[in-house]
Every structure is written in C-alpha cells, then in structure tokens.
Amino acid sequence: MSLYHLSNYEIKRGNKKIIIPLGSIEQHGPHLPVSTDTIIAEYFANQLTKKIPSYSLSGIPSGVSFEHKPFFNISISNDLLSELLSQVCISLGENGFNQIIILNGHRGNLGAVQYVPQKVVRINPKMKVFGINYWQLIERDFDHGGFVETSLMLAIAPKLVQMQKAKSGYLNKKMLHSTYSSFLSNTASFKITKNGILGDPRNATIKEGRKIISVTMKNLERTIIELDKLLTM
Image 1 (cartoon, rainbow, N blue to C red):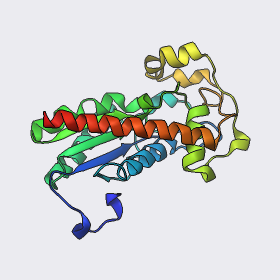
Image 2: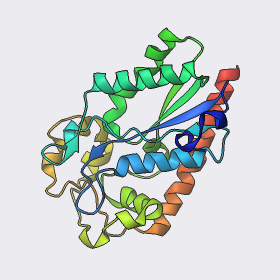
Image 3: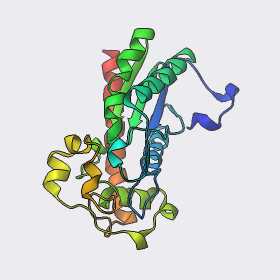
Image 4: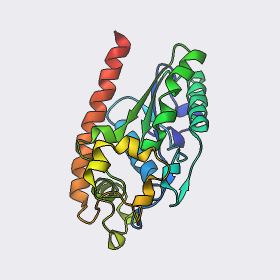
C-alpha cells in the first residue's frame, strides 16, 4: 500500500516495514521517458506491498546520472543523495518505521546507497536499513533503454513507450555485461552510443516484460523474506 495517499490516522506505526523506490531522471533513448528508472522502481515497490506487510513511498526521482552526459540528465552528487536518503530514513524511524528497504532502480546510485545503512544506524541503532538493486534479480542481461527496460515499460506503462522511435544502440555485449558496472561509472561512458541506448529495444514486448516482472517479483519477495529471517536470528 502506498503511504503517499493515506491520512495520518490510516497509517499504522510501530515495527513496520517501508519501501523507498529510488530512481533517476536521465535519458533512455528516443522511445522511453526520462523517468523510466523511477517508474520501474515505484512499480516493484507497490507490487511488493501486496505480497508482504509493508508500505511504499513515492519514488525519489533525483539520482546520480552524470555518466549520461552529454545526453539529458538531472543529477545530484553521491554525498547529497546519501544524505537525503539517510535523513528520510531517520525521519521514518522517528515515525515508527524501523525496517526500511531502499529499492534502487539506477546503477549510478550504488555509491550513495551503500553508506546509508551505517549512517542511519549511528543515529538510531534500532533501525534496519537495506538496499536492494532490482536489476540484479531479473535473471537477464541488463541494458539501458534496450530490450529489458523497454519490455518492462511496455508491461508497466505502455502509453509512455514510443516503439515507433525505438532504434538499436551500442551492442558490444562484452563491454555491456562483463564490465558493466565499471563501464557506467565513467562520466563519459555514454559518448559511445549515438542515441543513448545500450542494447536493442526493437523486439521488446509486453509479454516479455510480464515474464521479467514475474521472475523479478519472486526474487524480490524471497530476498526480503530472507532479510526478515536474518533480523530474527
């Protein structure tokens, strides 16, 4: 259930779990909106609240996307994003939420997210904060504006996808998948693709998007259950 639309009197506090979707505002080629990462993270967060007792927040859209230069991006620094997330978590703790999951939808946010749990625990030792990167649980080779992300968006928000504008992008799989993380940490990395796409979205379908969602949801739910077990040990 999204906490965003509830009144003060509808929110049940105390030993509660809440999911914070974290995305970005950055180009995803000519056929996907700049809010793609945030939309996907919000979708998974909302779906998870139907599977496990929890609330979700609206997505935090500002992320670390400097690597997309010279394409469009609205970015904030690692330090600022880390501090923002930490302050949000601390405030949630003061309101009775002591289990927080940051559901990250953008690789560029990894550096900021990893330090949040220790920052929060220093202020409130009773809190438990975890970061989960949904793309690590999709069981597919990931991309950027390619087959996977486009299929997901077709299944989640088809009206925002302009398939007639979809074009193939950079296709060096060795570069994209074996060294993807270090590759995207380079602020000039997207200069190698003329249209901002890493991968090929042209064969993306709603059916494939639903398959990816099904697998990812099962893996996300299992991961959160395993984290809960660790907390009770």
